[in-house]
Every structure is written in structure tokens, then in C-alpha cells.
Length: 280
Image (cartoon, rainbow, N blue to C red; front, side, top):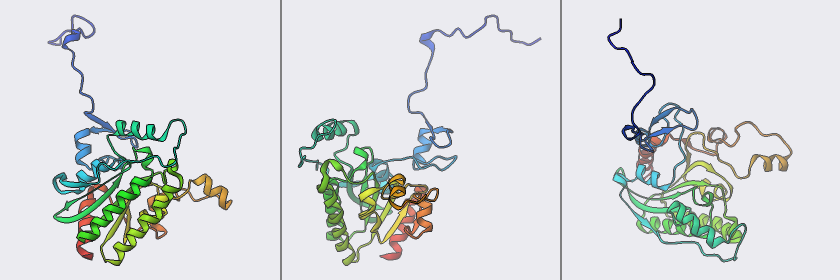
């Protein structure tokens, strides 16, 4: 006979004695559905330890990963969008900007800053997809241009981390002008012989792909990032042909010569450091 016999069925723990796991303790990978501790996921550079899925993250995470001890000086932190066209769709553009700022804690779809990366001085601009789909408006173009100016003045390498749905249509032609503006600034960087590295993350599309994202001295990407200009349906209707499966994946783009290499986020800081030491 067992030394223990349950006399009552069920669990009779009083409600006040029950304990729940705190929110945010566990992370479930959206790709493989396996679970890991949130702390381990963060220490793994926000990648899944089971399938290596790269979670979509923004400037806060990238700055933490790349800048030594997460110490950096942010540039133009207070710059915000105006409403040059008095645009309104389901809501007025200023109201959309205001509500997005409150929701995300961001001023616009890009943050820029400078600091040290493995003791190398560097200027980084990183896009935030959570701010209106990482769309490129006047503020995005201006902040990138000013970051390039800082890199030029101090002769520091420039890293652009792109994650965007393209130009911000609420600003129409003003947003499209940022393609030429940023491209012209990058030309000055090239003439000065200062390295420019473009990192494309998931997704990088539209006018961003058609301008600064593909103009790097080195164009690199994270694994399985979606990279393209127009969507598959638009391209199919334009050329009248079916497209290869996965033709907008980073691996396909690399195979066809539009990328220099694909880098795992866990190795990003060391790979960038090695690359800059080779070319400086």
C-alpha cells in the first residue's frame, strides 16, 4: 500500500493562497511556437534559441545591442512632424502623429545617435516600424541627413538600420523628396571616404529600398528579411508573369547579387566591428 492516500478529490487551495506567474516572464516564438524565458530571449539578441527566428525589434533594442553598455548620445530627439498638406484620412494627420507618439513613446519613425561600438566611434540611425509602419516622412529624411552631417563632421562611420513600409503618403511629395535628399547626403559621405553600412531588416520596402537602404558601401541583411520595392501582386500585374517563390527574401536577394552578406543578429556587433577595422 502507498504511504500516501489522497482523502479528498481535487485541489482545495484557498484563492488567497494561489499565485500566478508574473506577466512577461515567458516568450513564445511566433515561428516555431516554442517557449523560452523572456530574459534568455533578450540575452540571445531577441532571437529564438530553437529556430533562430529574428523577432522584429526597434531602435531601443538595436542601440542596446550595438552601443557599448548602451551608452550613446541621441541626435535631434525632439524633432516631430508638421502637417504641410493638411492631410486627413480616417483621422487628421496631426491627430494620428499625436496618438502614435503616445502609444509608442517615439517622436517619429527613426532615432539617431552616436557612441562607441567595441570602442569604435560610430553614428547609427535606426528605424522603428511601430511608428506608422516605419514610413519615411520629412522628419525621417531630416534626421538621417543630420546624422550623416554628424558623421561627416567627425569622420565617423555611419550605420543605417532600415525597417520600413516605404514613403509616408500623408506627406505625399514631401516624403518622396527624402529619397533624393538622403541619397545626396550619402554621396557626400562617399566623396569623403567615410564608410556607410546599410543593414536591411524585416521588412524593408518601398521608397526606403529605392534610396538609402540599397546605397551602402556594404549592404547587409538579417536572415529571412523581406526586401523589395513593390508587393508581389503589383509586380505580377506589371510584368504579367508569375514570380519565383520567396523572391523577396534576403537569401534570394543575396543570391542575385543585391546584398553583400547576411548576418545573424547575435553576431552583428562583432561582424560590424571586424568590417570597419578592415576598411578604415
